[in-house]
Length: 91
Image (cartoon, rainbow, N blue to C red; front, side, top):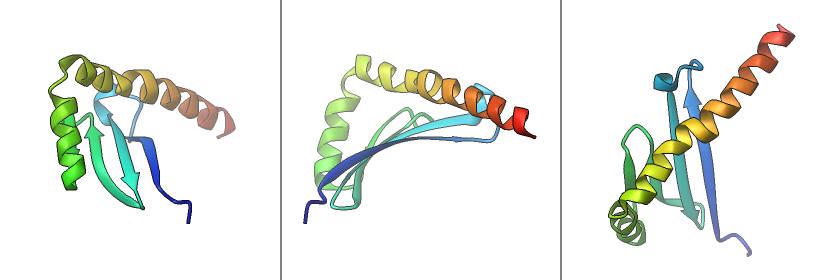
């Protein structure tokens, strides 16, 4: 009924230090996560047959893996710095 595929970018953190931040990119089909990239693992991991095939393909592309690893700093660090400053000015 219209629910098919979606992806989620998220940042897990407990400080603004880059070493304390994890970037996670997940892809879902019919509410089931089938592949995930985690900056802590440094590569894609597949959870279904389709996800495993995609993980093998994307993990074989060194340039794409570097791009995904850089998302921790580009996407997470940037937004976490903004969120921390907003929270500190309100406290």
